Structures are given as C-alpha cells and as structure tokens.
Image 1 (cartoon, helix red, strand yellow):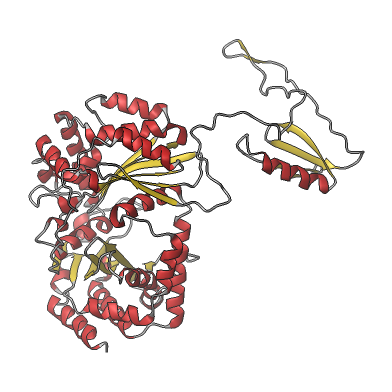
Image 2 (image 1 turned 90 degrees about the horizontal axis):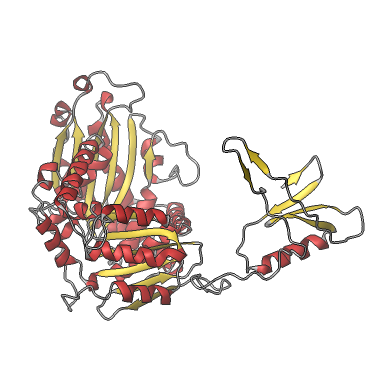
Amino acid sequence: GINAEYGVFFVTCTFNPPQKMFLKILHKTVTKKTLKPQIFHRGLWGFGKKKEPQTRTITRFTPEPRENTKFKKTLPPSYPPLTKNFSPIAEVEVDRQNEVKTNQTLPPKTTISKLDNGLKISSFSAWSSCSCVGVFVRCGSRDEPIDKPGLSKLLERLAFKSTDSRSTADMVLQLETYGAHISTSSSREVMIYSSELLHDYVPMAVELISDTIQNPQFTEAEIAETIESLSIEYEDQQTQPEVFLPEYLHHVAYPTSSFGNPLLPEPHLLQNITRNDLIKFMNSRYDARNMVLAGTGIEHSTLHSLGSKHLSSIPNRNPNPVVVDAPIYVGGELKIPSKTIKEMGPRPEGEPPVKDFIVLGFETTGYRHADFFSFAVLHTLLGGGNSFSAGGPGKGMYSRLYAKLLNRHDWLDSAEAFYYSYMDTGLFGVSASSLQSLEQIDQVCSVVCQELCNVAKKISDIELIRARNQLKSSIFMNLETRSIIFDDVGRQVLLYEMRYEADEICNAIDAVTIDDLKRVVRDMLQKVPSLVVYAPRDVLDQFPKFDVVTSFLNSVGQTGK
C-alpha cells in the first residue's frame, strides 16, 4: 500500500514462522531499490525513501497501559514490545509434527492405499492451514427398498447425533470446541460424512466420523424429530418447481425401481421407517469395500494410520465386488396441474412471477462410458440460463440455448440444459419455463424440441472450441476450492478406484469432435423421452400429445435431417 501523506510504501504479509525464504527475498529486493526498511511490528514492514546513510535502527515502542472504565481493570499493553535483537528472518522454533511436510516446489499428488479390510484411503497432499477429511460410502437412494424410500435422507440427518459413547450434546460440544465445520450429504449413489477444520485437529474429526458411522444410537426421539423436520422441508420444497420437477423426472424415467424414488419422499412414507430399518440398511451397504476415507491438506501416512486406528474394525461382509443392478429406463409423460394466478389470490409484493415449466429428458450413458465426455461438452455447448442474466464471463451468453432461444423469444423465461450422470445410466435434457400469464408453454416445448434436433444436424467449429474451453476452465476454477478438491478425490476413488488428474480430463475433452456430439444426440433422440409438464389444468389439456413429440424427435434421431 502507499500512504500519500507521508510518502511511505508498506508491505503486509502473513506467513508461517519457519518460512524465512520469503522474507529474505523481500529484504534483498527492497534494499536493492534504495529503500530503507524499518520494522513497525511483526509481519508489517515500512519502507521510506532514502534520505540518509542506510543504518539499521529499531525503535522500541511500549504503549502506556490502558484503563478500562467498564470493568475498572488495567489491561496489558496493546502490542508486545520488540526485543532488542528482533529480526523478521530469525529462526523460530515451532512444533511442526502435524503439519504437511511436502516439497512445495512439486505439484501436489493424490496417494491411494488400502486397509486390510478393503477400505480405501485417498489423500491430496496440497498444503493448507485447514484440512478436509471425511468418509465416502457407495450407498444412496437407489439401494433403498422400493417400499421404504427416504432411508438415505434420514441417515444424512441423523449423522453426528448420539452414539454409544457420546450424547448429542457431547458431540456438538466437541465439534464446536475445535471449530470443526461438519456436513453430511446423500444422493442416489453416494453418502458423504465430512469435516473441515485446522489440520492439527484431524485425528479428532476422524474419530467422530468413525463413531457416528459405526455406533449410532438412533433413538426414537431423534428419529421422530428428524422426520418432523423433513416433513417441513418437504412442504417448502413443493413450492419450488425448480427443485421438485427433477425428482418427478427421475420417477417418470425409472418408475419400476428405487432409482426413481425421490431423495425426499412424502412425509407419510417417512413415518413408516423404524430404527430397525435404518440399522438393517446400514448393515447391508456400509461395507468396508464400499468406503473411502479421503483427506486434503494432510500427510497420507498420518491419514492411513488414523484410518487403521478407527475404521479397521468395519467388517468386510462381502469379499466379492458389489454388483448393482442397472435401473430399467422406461420414459413417458407426467402432467402436474398447478394453481392458476386467480386460485393463488393476492401475492405478497416482491414475490417472483408465476411460471409454467417443462422438463424434457433422455436416457444416456453413465460416467464409466466412453461417451461421458461427449455429453459433458454437449451440456456446456447447449448451456442456457434465464432472461434476467446480466451476461459476462461464465453466464452462458454465447451458448446455443441462450443465443437461439432466449434471445429470440421474449415469452421464454428460462431454458437450461441439464446432465445427471450415474454409474450405469444418465439423464440429459433441457428444462424451460415461461410466465403463466402468457400461456405459451406449448410453444416452449416446440422450440426446445426443435433446437435439440438442430444440434443433431449442425454444430459449428467455433461452438465446439468454445464449449471445450469453457468446460476446461470450469474444471480448473473449481479445483481451486478446497472442498471441491476433497469431494473430487473421495468420489473418484470410490467410483473409479483411482483419480484422473485434471490434465487427463482435459485431454479427453479435447478429443471430443463434432461427429461425436452429433452421434450421441441422434442416439439420444431415438429413445423414448421423459417429459414432465407443470402448468394449470386447462393449459395441460391443450399441450401437444406425447406421441406427437416422440415421433418428431425419433424421426430426426433416425435420419439426422
């Protein structure tokens, strides 16, 4: 910074005490520029213009004790006085036992090992003052009995509560004492128990995660309280079509298996779940071979020893690889009537306008298939957004859906591509909406179908290059975030039993061609689509017939014309 009044240039830095090299370089750089360094406080250097021969002078400053009028107590000085021989590059002794000892001139790497019971350990050696650590379980709503939906969501909300050795209060108190941020998430395929905290306290986090996984109490009071909380959340979710329509899409696509069950089922279905159901579900899926202990910002040997100490007792009930039946895709149509503006009555000021929605999806391959990257590039190429986007980098202003649909049809409120990728299947499509007052949802369906067909016919070179570059940029930007790196390390090792580095992924993205995109789109359009429409009943009656939509898309998929 520069202080114009006094002509002073100063540098503020935060560093670890043993890291002397930065201070040495800074000291040499400044003195070569004929500036005279003068230390004001630890970590803060001031440099003034040279007006006299360079002599090292350190001025001791000891502020007078301040009197606190509120408590009538004399407080110590605000700053400790500088010692006579203080030097910012002096050797400082610090206990580095728990710090990551990595050569910071080398790029961080992912290390993978395995315990005797089959549980995998993965770590990313990037140094940080904070660490992320957690357990990934190959378990989700697709593994639930079809008549018992919601088990995964209940397990998510019952995490870090009472165990055989701790009460809920003890668990919360211990987490707050160490400043740990905990989170648990469930999806259709993966459960994640994680904690983010200072890396010195990682052993405590691993112990608590192990305790909540292996020794949960699941008291009747906790289950009842959690079900009540989820019931309130369900009612709130039903007021947000953007949230519940993708769940209905999965139900239409996979109606005969638990894969189509919503992540958060209706409250009356949750009431049927008992403590025995939760324990039986955990015993069937929480197997050592289905688990990964992942961490970032921690030495792999330390993480491996913690896993061996706390997680080696998890049984390996099934020594053979777990075989998961692929869900059967069916497809079809679901029309959900919504309330009209008149039925809703007066709306509070500032409420968003009432909209009609369509969600059109197709079955695709899973993330283990060679076409996974083709669909990822296609998703970026289509892009999309809403009519209120301010533009700018990353807003998708040059994507196909934005340029061809939102910029040309003022009655279209939003149009955005989606891609749900799973182990052995996936859903790709477009969700779109328009204001209910315009009654244009049938036209929305028409232009969305037409644009999907246009992609099967023609894609320009500049569109492909832009989509590939944008996708790679998004990957590298996300990998600058500690929590996303942690999620990537654990999830890839759980699902692939290895981790693909960013440069390998970028090479796969660059290998995608225009012919690849046209081929996957044509193959996709030949299948039965899954269509969900959310609009007033009279509008649904005028909506195009499902057979008409299907035949139009199939004809383009078969001929490419």
